[in-house]
Image (cartoon, rainbow, N blue to C red):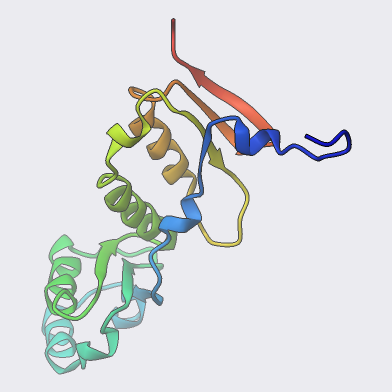
Length: 170
């Protein structure tokens, strides 16, 4: 080894970095707001609502992730969201009740639930923070919950600057 050779100690540390952005499912996100279907912005009229559902071209939601909400301060019966979901389900990648953050949380929970955690047994893990994609905080909590029983240690941040979160007892 030369005297001035730069040694990458991070790559030699045995740390496994998990970047939650790598799990981000590509695809368009769409918020379907029932508010525009309410009579006077307050009441859902069943007959008109069912007619809308019958006439709507649901194929325009093909391969989208859809969040169902009502942004108005109105009482919307639960069956209305269920009816929308029955029509969208054949076309969308996923439909959920809630806002975009709820949608992202559901997507990440599903994806992270499929991880083979045995791959991380006794590993020193860094969960990468800060990125460009909308990774919900719930995903960081979920990955920590999943890995804690098997990991030797869990840290947050970048390998060169981490915040320790968990260390397995010896």
